[in-house]
Image (tube, rainbow, N blue to C red; front, top):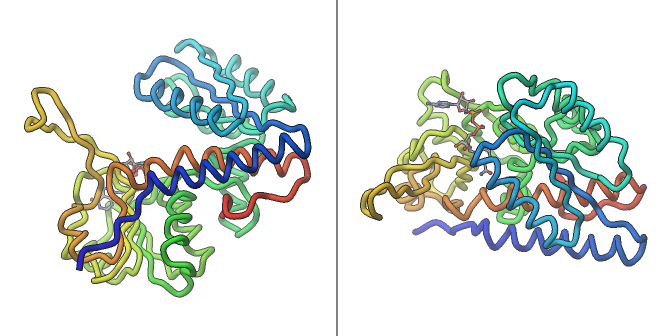
Length: 300
Ligand code: NAD
């Protein structure tokens, strides 16, 4: 039987809708408008596109969006001074520094200079530690989006076997922590894992976050398992015309969809959830900063 397609576009629109409702209530009941500041250093074209769409969606849900575009040669000192200013600005509840940064800047130092309470990307070492110890934290957006989709599809994840392929700090590791927090039995696989297909075959939930096009094949998937495909890979698509490309995930969609119980497509799966969760995190940060109840369903 063909897998259920988990529609990330539709789900993300729902999350943005919930965020917008909370923003409207914050304005009406408390006179507070959540504010998200995005800092972009340099002119990387992909980063510019991300920052533009983050700004647009921030405004669409009724929040204030502040963009700081800094010259590619900005010094570390100046960047840290800007972050310091945002840290103390009461109108700003979320700060995001678009990565990657130019090579002369120390990414760890910059991220760890953000006030953890405003770290809506969830990359600050304090938030990493809080998540790792099961405490309230800001949760990285992409894994949060994956968790929301899994909870929505399955209800409880308790006792399920989950395999996360990839051990990056921004996706694989936090994803594993979140699944553990929901009482899954979690395996983290990576580039040195022996017999990956066999490891994946044990999983009720497979999260692929590798960055290798169509690597996970249908015959790796346990019948009925759920496949969450985080990968975004661009392949040449001469059939669409000269110089054209198409996006594929880390899972071979056609063969996995034949065996899986549910699967996220690429595009239109995990991707749209990332910005939706950034907005959700900003609402959460704003509520926490003002001592208000956190919005239900928008946090881990
Ligand atoms: P990364 O390069 O930091 O990490 C990749 C991980 O894959 C590593 O931990 C590595 O050990 C593992 N790996 C590499 N080759 C492997 C192999 N042959 N077998 C098993 N594991 C292997 O990447 P990342 O930042 O975690 O991103 C992973 C993918 O997710 C990329 O395609 C990226 O574009 C995508 N991504 C998507 C979103 C989104 O919003 N949908 C967000 C972040 C990343």
